[in-house]
Image (cartoon, rainbow, N blue to C red; front, side, top):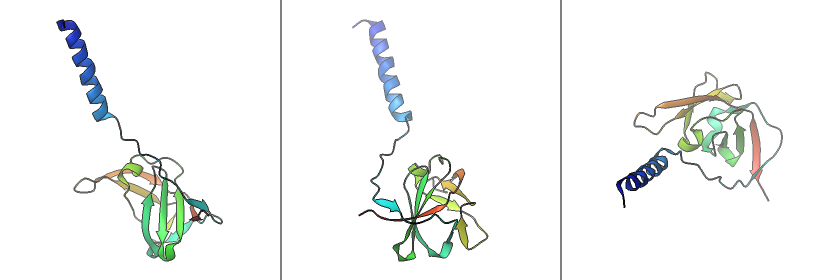
Length: 129
């Protein structure tokens, strides 16, 4: 093989390898077996939140005591929320409301803060039959 051809092949291989390293991971959509049930509400009692399930960059399911689920679809995509799947919030009230803001937490040793994003309303959800 001549030197110019080998050099071109090496550059193409290096570029392809770099693209694989730099390209962002694309999360596969998870099956959703929930459907809306009733009208959305503005706030949740913080003490009643048992767990959260970040579904993607715009969707968080809040699992409440008693297994009730409220889905919050953010008005805008929140960068890295779906990949990191963790967030924090601050509120002086005992409720988390649609006017509140969440902040993505990166999984670094000190949980570095990422984008801050506004919440939407909380839609009650039930399992689809």
